[in-house]
Image (cartoon, rainbow, N blue to C red; front, side):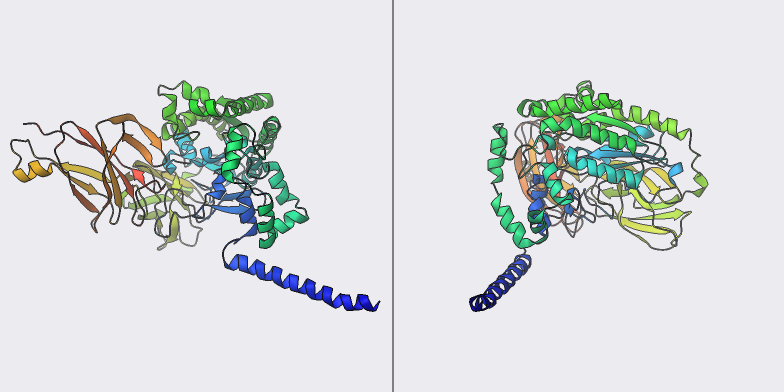
Length: 573
């Protein structure tokens, strides 16, 4: 007994010391920033979309593992084109809106393809569908199209996302775009169903992993494998941890997704439209499960008796080459997104027309109207403050949403009882509608604001005979008009691509192998930059600029964008 009594203090001391060390380690990991959030630390092992996030685009989610974050900015100085407000998803938010019995609502559910990865907001699927419905007599002041799209999502995550959209939005129509890529991608630790089970019903080890930094770090090291090794094994057809959603499980999960969609909503059950994903030929060749998954999507929709559309067939039946419909291995280009939206609009419009006939009409007199908007021309790179003067709204009401080109003005505030101000995010060039979306009604102003690209101009001698000695030596002068502090990367080529090749930075219009003309040309305080060209060309050359906002480099980053090229012709004697 005495030995036991002597041992107890030692055990207590050891336990106390261990506890102190664990607490110290927990605090140190947090203070050093090595494991700022144990849940985030662990869930970076779910998808590369979350792993590669360096700017706060994503946040942890208690049921779906992660989601896009509210209040995202490309940087403190620039909104970028993917910026978000209080609503964490991209595009037109679902609230505020007029009473549900007067507004037709369409929800898009999917991954980065529905999010609009590599697209400006005006070219993203939700706004493309909004415009396609508008052309069919269903304008955006009567129909609200909202997209719940999160990059990297599998069909497993989409189910929980759909449930939230149904509860929050009560849509009349649900459009599903599942299994485009992520289901067949390699699991980085476990399959998605198992990972989400850790969140929904955690065991002891899961609780340590999710709630303590020490547990997260130790258990992360236990099942760690280099991502390169995981991808290499997956490409060999033997993924180390399997695929995110095993192929055998996909049909059942698709049916569950469709049945959940059909059972939710507000004014009766929503109609469901399922769009099977499309892919470039190289993707289907190198990753054959993508084609099998698309076929499974069609089969599930047909089995469930809902509208089934084949994205691959839709794009193949277009006049353009299939490759022009994609920005990369899976994401539709603006051209592809527009074609898919046109096809989806046909059954969606038919359903909305049927439901509109049963609704009481929207009272236009209750909707706010736009008295003035300033400016009416702004640069595509965004960050421009816009003021809108309204009639039929007062500062004692909730702020409406002001949507321009498919995306909301951010940092919105009231200046007085009738004037609002907000900031534009980056968006595509051209005229854009303004939609005012408030709790009493909505209104639309067509072509209210025009976004313009940086302008390239060439000053040329009239001819070689008329050129001075200095002009003949220096050739032409290129002048760029953009914004103060913008930087440009200039390339030139003898070949111009028509149609262009789309990528995450817009439309690349130079063919062949473009040559670098200048790196980092800086616009002055007036937004001007001048470059004297070294020689007069012997053939017509095309010059295109990749433009990045002040503080960014016009390189591979997603904030830079291409603008329209300018022709540099040879001088004729």
